[in-house]
Length: 353
Image (cartoon, rainbow, N blue to C red; front, side, top):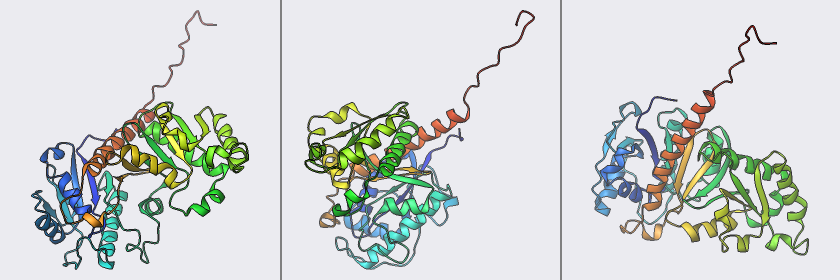
């Protein structure tokens, strides 16, 4: 296991016109957070000072010009840019998206170089961040491109973990995207993540059906019988506790999810609508399956309340704690697997045959 140190939490600030900087500053206004980690914000001192003044937030910030100068027990701010950026809080613009991308790119590069241990991302605007270097539907796809591994978006709280078999795609494309191979791949990523990142040795996973009532034996669609059910049966042959398909409309209302360590939803809103109903403000978005840990809050940019001091920061704070816990669990899992006790060979004696 690596030498113990205060975990360095890299933070990208998201859209400069949204609530990203506000929830970051509020989260670390309490100095006790520094007992758990060393935060490193990727932004600029001028932009942070601007938000502090408008929001009347008194978080102490320690500016640095190099990641070699990170100071424990301080809220470190790496000056990614020095110029004054013309943005209006609450009104997304080309500038607010361009500098959100700059913050993200620098943070991801630091994560790849192991100059930070984990990454927590504040919300971006998926429209104005688009550019020649960012042509993705969200953080998840961008991170999969720049890190190692294949990703799975998992929304998690204390009682519920929901992964998405298909992610940011239009609903009209979902049925065509579902295949036995995709189900098997996403189930394996969730299984591995539950084992190594959450320390659950034999996780139990539920798979939701694609169609209403799982197709009602073909009356409302055949995909659940032709694709989903056979895929689950193949997974079970490997000895993994994966069950389903379950009708999505009753699965959460009946609290069936409490019997499982993870749930795989077929598409975005099938999983996220019930998750946010049950856990909004307490949930965290985790990008599983990659070689580095990244989390984020379970909400968006909230431009309508940006700059008014109304942003709730509990989900961002939980994203920080979750990233720390996942990092420690994964480190311990790797250490234990690299140092397994080998069975001793039986020593032969004069009485051995």
